[in-house]
Length: 311
Image (cartoon, rainbow, N blue to C red; front, side):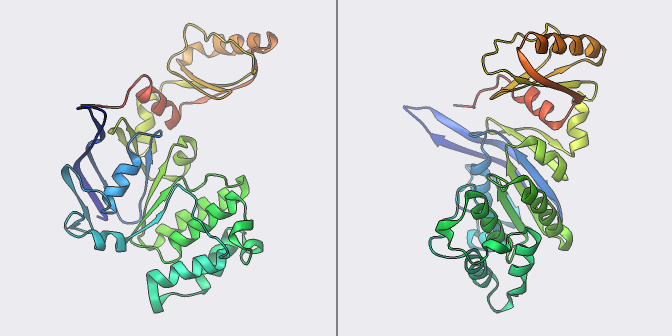
């Protein structure tokens, strides 16, 4: 086992006597060669648990073991065993991607670092044309890819990727997922921290849904989806001026910009298609799609209406 998180609780002081429970009795494990998706909205507690895994914060309760040894008693060892791509952009300044990735590889692996790995990563991600361009002149997507390469130039036993696909174009996003999967071939484990539930479902071996500091569910994608296996999902694109009322048989729903998701029982499929067709005729929606339930539907159902925990 690479990582064993046991009953971790972390609280932060707020206004007055209030305290925010950032992590509430979290327990999960990650095996060698496994991709574990940690899904949650901003404020769910994802960054807090990552910082405790790295030894940057100390749990108020519980413990974390990396390769069988407590992080609390050996924070330097924990950071040596982990490689991290942060959510925030890495400032490159005048460094080129090739210089930045090579520098990070040498810092982590020393004389054992193979410069050919930089070329391999750049080729796999099709970013060779930016390899020698100054960081200040790069787009956000290329800087994000560079940060990923810096994290995996000489990867530790546990690689933590925080929203690795932000700002990346669809083509290179596909390449990135392939490289991430290939990282596990030698037993490297990965924590994928993201709020992009749809992407995560296609990539992870297991997933934990984090909300309000609590793990509401964890398991393989199939295990997670089994809780709504008898549901269908309707996804619609709203007109910008739409004041849509969902059908009375709609179950859990979620609005994200102009995109609306809601679930239905299978016996309501015909009625829902007719309802959607009528809404298109009325100009309330632009288009719609109907498909089996996904992890996103479970995520919406579990987190709808829940608030962050406080004591």
